[in-house]
Image (cartoon, rainbow, N blue to C red):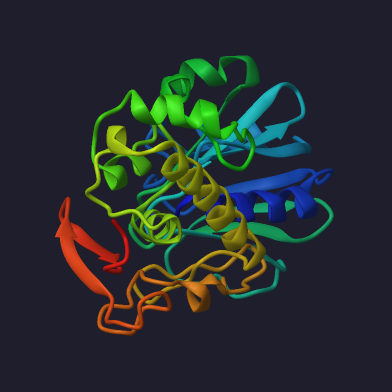
Length: 277
């Protein structure tokens, strides 16, 4: 699944490019991404003829605010891509949704697994449709918190650090890739208990979290063979060239000049340097 930097990059691109455009038609190839509906028209008629007023993000949900107090919600599934296209561009395989604008141009959702979720609701009812939003934790992009507040929450949850970083009730949108990079930057092991950190270690972790996420944003996200990523214009993320530990098993650490290690943690590989403690 995409992590927070990639979803935010998509949001910014769509906000820049789509606000003010009016939806002419919406066509769904199947019901795969419209699991909340019984018929395709039950969704498409809700958004056709409406103008896009803004594109926001709630956690990892993209919320496209439309005229007439309606919001279209897009949760991207594993391997899914949102792309801007000219009307004449060939429609590629696995294209599940095509939104055509009156001023020409289209937004297409390509989803090989059909695991995305797309629906439209009255804007006032958004919280009712997404009750999980109420339980979300810190958002390191849109709602940065002081390190002291971060530390208080961290110390109150005695679990292993990587588990905590990947817990959406603590921090939104951190997965295996960025969790490993944050912990390397902070010099802390993945299995260190959160309530064992000193004040200085809490400050280092907070600083590493903020700097890693914003560095990934500057480099347009992370695209890997295991999890490719392109923005809505088709530009591939460049942050993979800046990863320090994730996927670099056996290569020399920039900190210790010794091979980076890996271990299975929670069913997935975790990468770290022996200098982390």
